[in-house]
Image 1 (tube, one colour):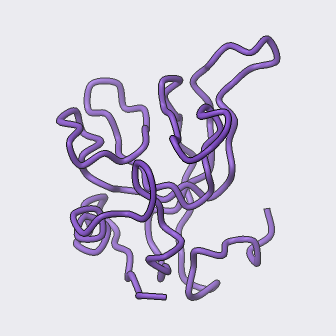
Image 2 (cartoon, one colour; image 1 turned 90 degrees about the vertical axis):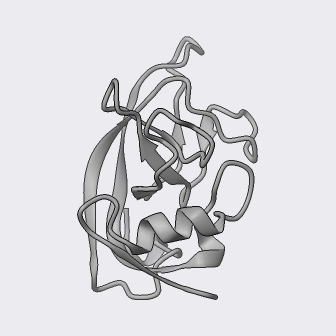
Length: 130
């Protein structure tokens, strides 16, 4: 994917990408179908499985801490229409635009921004209001 397509970044020169495994039960209420995940979606890591799901401040299983931002649109359905765990690329640090980072249903909440800016994942985001 081209760097210029990373529209949630303020700067294209400082970021770090990793490969994550998205849990098959992850959903994006803003997309149709909900098994398609939007680029810019905030992610949390489920402690028990190590897989990543949509950030949810009420989660209680690890995903209540925003640790990464999805770097590509991803469909969790296989060719037969069944949801599957799926590898994807996510950013774990960088200068980002708050308006382009999404929480469970729309813009990320203040708790998620705090997680990202305090280095909950061992690396931190600098979030700017754009």
